[in-house]
Length: 219
Image 1 (cartoon, rainbow, N blue to C red):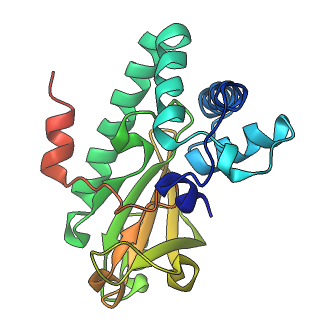
Image 2: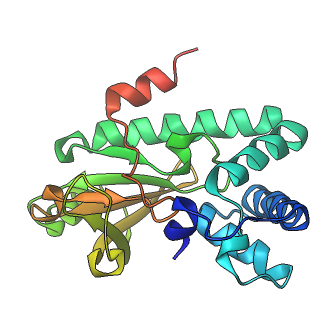
């Protein structure tokens, strides 16, 4: 798994391999910015496979890819990316205020700052049952699509073991607001007792409340 690669490197990489990692990171950044890929894991894997690399020990780490994402955006999308990110966060905030009864938390690329104009807004919601969310959306005349969404959980604050065993499918309600896709990932009462993990880094998912998103939007 990629989280094992991020934790340790069983072999020391030579200069050629380091250069290859950088090349993969640059291509992964391009894929994220130009092809609308939000997942670091997906972009890194696709980029590596384009160069015929399948050994995950030769994949660049999250920080290396994010560094190249920032460079790519500063070179080619500086003004537009900042504008897009601000608009996405503003839309996220409006959605969060509408859904405040479900204690929404912003996660993903829109929170972390590497989102682009095609990025999806991901919100974690708390509900006694997923049907509460569908009833709420229908009562506000918001058309949506229901999909299964995969989350990974750790049952403790210690580093997760056997993460595949903590993979769970949860309902996700998707709709459009201001021509931007909003993805509502609904956690049940049982799942709220566990720690959701970011599948890119296998660390606890970064989350932001309404107040924290308001702070992000301040000049």
